[in-house]
Length: 110
Image 1 (cartoon, rainbow, N blue to C red):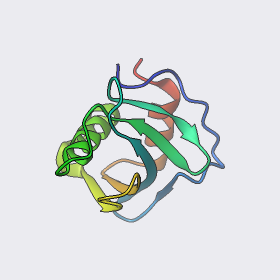
Image 2 (image 1 turned 90 degrees about the vertical axis):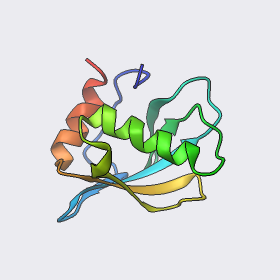
Image 3 (image 1 turned 45 degrees about the vertical axis):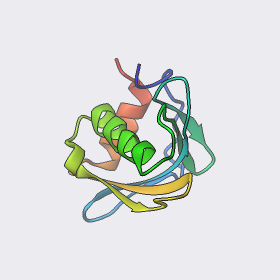
Image 4 (image 1 turned 120 degrees about the horizontal axis):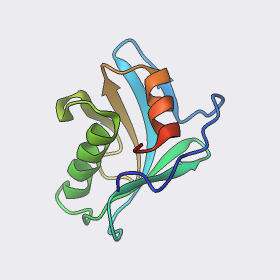
């Protein structure tokens, strides 16, 4: 399961914005979870639970892989922009629009 449930997303949320390269997401990562999944949106962050420990970039790699699978893009299209060693991160999703991201989050993994 990639997403716990359908997320209630409002277009006024500030956790994502469109750039010329794609969509920038503000995420908060919770490592050492029981399973990896997109949890919910809280404030200005998309919350993501990751099963890996935050050791030697394993949690970051798993997070990028999860985002690529969830949004239906290649792993190479998910780029960590900020927060390599922090729970708060900025991720660039290349080749996808803001509307596509919102739609995917709203429908979950239907």
